[in-house]
Image (tube, rainbow, N blue to C red):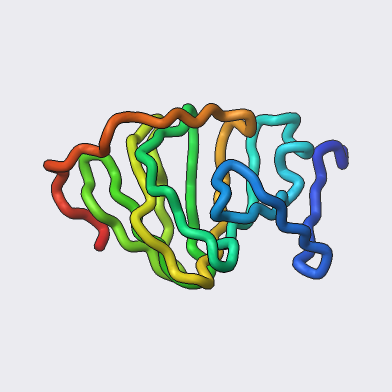
Amino acid sequence: MTTKGFAVSHARDARFERGLRSFFEYRDLGIEAATGGAAVAHVIRTVPGATSSGAPHLHRTTFQLVYVLKGWIEFEYEGQGMVRLEAGSCVYQPASIRHRELAHSDDVEMLEIVMPAGFATEEVAAVDEHASPGGG
């Protein structure tokens, strides 16, 4: 039996820090360290009073999942159009899908799991305007 890579994160000890997006705060759940960088997991919440930039971008990942814990958030996805995610909604974002945030509630909170931990993010041209609506 091994305990290498075991990780526990409690809400009572939570520390949120600014990260990839200036309008969000991120709580590291210890998964990156536990997996040696194979994956990262964090809770994301909005920064009070901050507005989103909505810049189209993509992530160089092999896996990305977002689960909304609280509030709501709207994204525009390449080939899908506008998708509104609410508490209890889950989205798997395929590798390198172009997307952008359109809006979010003041209380949005999400769990995000991404592989690998050190993924790159690139700003891109506009998301496909002729996408069919999805998920809304």
